[in-house]
Length: 521
Image (tube, rainbow, N blue to C red; front, side):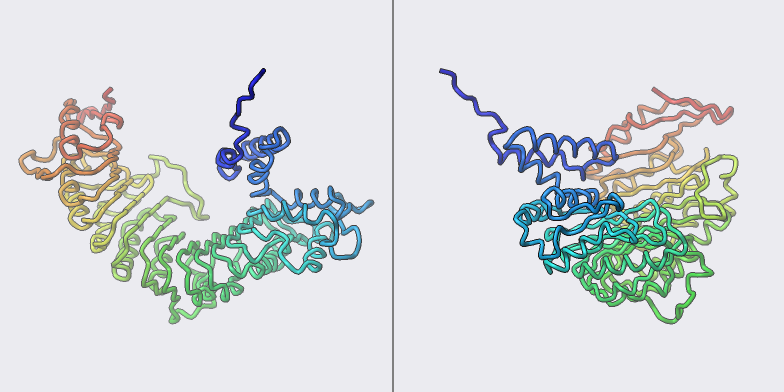
């Protein structure tokens, strides 16, 4: 007599741990998302024990309200209106849909939706009015477990609408992203954002990405649960005032417009007060970022991201130094600083790197790194520092590395990205200063360094093995065709014995007479 061997498909509890690996949230491209959704669907109809685990993931995030409309139509709760647009639906009868025998079945699936993407539709068509009808009848959320709403569109024009009736009070995250919109559609788009925010009184995170648009945030003043606000279109100082009453706002991302419009309609004597803010991301130029820091009261700020567009390269050093002076004076307890500075053209577009235009004179007379960042040395609490001056050439020396080490004893990560010239680099031996003064340093990424210029007798090695795990130096350059690679490796192992092997990174030998460069294997 044949015996039955139990398979994994018979143990449904295990399947609830397996199918999350097919969660579309873990995939980026549309093709991959479509493929895993198709896999989930096929799994649900292939095996009875697969059905519930697969449907749980499949309905967790739906790409539009179309699956819900199809479900209503399948159960005859709504019917397509003949002779109208393909997305036109209406209730089968003008009565409470909860009386329909299949309403509970619809609720079974609707209650599993945690995230939905809503796309604009023609507001003049009767298609999505069915959501308003159902909402009016039932008097409760259609999607009771909803926590994330994405309103995404490649274009938004006059006459468009969004099914905001599907947004439940349980919604915690709202993202509005419109790639392009008609200029005369601003009022309608603003109304949709206002309706969406008002439908989610427990909203905690808001992200708005709409080009060339001064967003109105007045509707947010009563959303006391908001913790994160990210506004990517340029926004004026006056438009940020509705955020001041928010008691739990911890994260703010804004793009600051050009100086000439930043203070329009704003009283420069009135400070922007955000006492609970801990994380701030600013996008703009040095001057206007400095103005923002001057006129904002952020007593608990600990993390700062700066994305700077630099048009006039000759102003980089003085403008950056002035901004850093303000930063150091007002936020001495800063623990995390990340800077991305890129050259832009007059319109703000990032210029492609070219050694024909990025010369030392573009960053001012002298062009030294310490002239730029010296004010930051007073920020003694810094633990994570990333300074990326993309394609700008600086002179920097071993004394700069020593100054960083002696100023930032609590460093855990240090990333410095600059372009350098032969003969104007810090010595590789200066890493010993970081090993001695920064015992918590875990990750270190530095630009090209030279080896052999510092006197070995002056090197003071750490007394204990350092904990650094990742060491990445763009290049180590030797003088006059000397092969000092074994000395570099021995030095690195002595200073940072637990770090990633230096052999994984390039070592360049430079002939100072001819300028020829070759890479050691």
